[in-house]
Image (tube, helix red, strand yellow):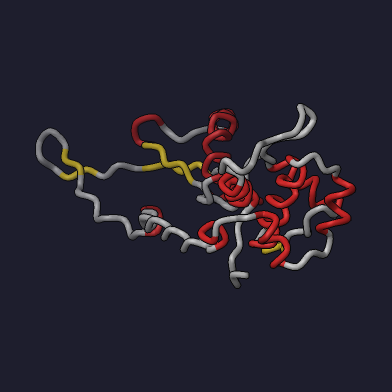
Length: 203
């Protein structure tokens, strides 16, 4: 048996389908039996003891070659008209050699292909962490330098809204309350994307 071979439930189901894709497998004997098992059926097999329980890698169920052989062997015996009780009596605790003989799975299905390399993730720009560029002074119509005064409004989660105070004046309490209400969807978006602490988002 190949050591270290492990698959997710979806990968196992695909390999089972490939293992049964040959003329020697006649398919389901009647309409009550699924010709090819899906994820739900595989889980049911493991719950009832027809197939070994998977190993767990964190919260992910991991299956190996023995699971593949057990399921394919079970389906081949079902195709011969055997009941699940008969199959369980024959195959429960069967050796890998016995399962391979009954399942007749091609060797290439048991070998684990190397997982494709994950595409390199582009570094996410942290524009908010970069020091601000030096601002060029604004000029009035006569060429003289002018300075724009800003008023800041503190938002939940540590965000800060800057307003041009010299043009519109400083916001009053009603303005700030309206700004907080209007900014709530933006603050929730920033928190969901990890740009604000999630435990401090506005409520």
